[in-house]
Image 1 (spheres, rainbow, N blue to C red):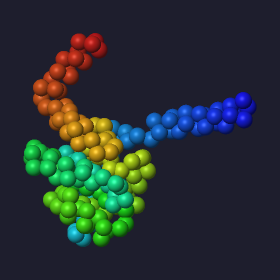
Image 2 (cartoon, one colour; image 1 turned 120 degrees about the vertical axis):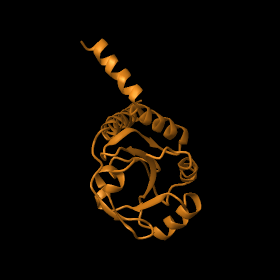
Image 3 (tube, one colour; image 1 turned 45 degrees about the vertical axis):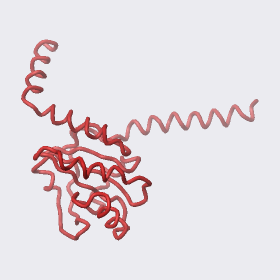
Length: 182
C-alpha cells in the first residue's frame, strides 16, 4: 500500500502545484503588449506601431505544430472582417524557410512577423501553439487568449471585443453601474 500511496501523493501534489502555477501565468487583459522591432518574413522592418491603427488578432504559431488549419481559417476570416480589424501572425521559431512555405500555403495574405527577444514577456506565458491574442489600438492585450485552433472561439471573442467598443454596450454598461453601484 505504501509503495503506491506516497508516489501517487507526490504526483498528485505536483499536478495541483502545476495547476496553480498555470493559473498565474495567463496573459493579463489591459496589459501593454511589449515594444518591439522585428522583420516580416519578407524582410520589412516592423515595430509595435503596426498595432496603432486597428484592433489586431495576433496568431502565434510555429512550424513545429501539427495543425495549420487555424492559419487557413484566419485567412478566410480576414476577408469578412471590419476595416478596423487586422490579422497578423507571429512565427515562434527560427526555421524561417519552413515558416515561409507554411505561410504561403495556408495564409498568404496575412502579414507574418519574425519572433525575437522583444516578444519574451508575452511568449513566456504561452503554453501552446497556436495561441491567438487580441491587441487594441493602444497596444493593450484585450479579451481572452485562444489556445489551439478553435476558430469559432476566436470569432466569438472578436465579436465580443467589437461589441464592447460599441456605443450601445458602453451606454448599457454605464446604466448598469449607476443602478448597481450607487
